[in-house]
Length: 171
Image (cartoon, rainbow, N blue to C red; front, top):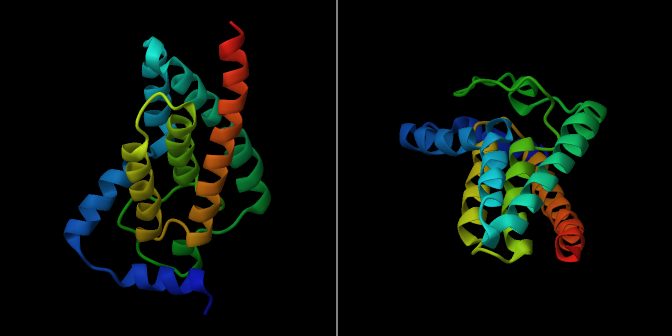
């Protein structure tokens, strides 16, 4: 049994209602990237956080294109709950597993805050980590899906910050 399958097997055996509620809250924070886009838009209204808002929104566009339109359909990895015929405690996603969209969205937002250097980023990274863990907890993703999503989100937020920094400071 590989490490991905082993961890999914462990998660499928967890039966703890308080943890279910805890992680369900965090997993739904990442649904459809709505929270990230909303935060990016709100940040645009304030001069102090405008660069962060632009970076978040650009990184969300990059994540959507690379993750949802290119990688997920190309790699077409079956989700763990389907692969191992596991019962779900949350509504099943309709797309493929790799990479984790919740993870790349959450870490693109946290990375955007970090790279823009306008706000303290630790709270964003804590929430992003809990969102990512929730995806494994509910057997919606393999750990490697989540790790790939984290790396993708951080890389795309770094690239977005570089682009926004060049545009933002030319004005």
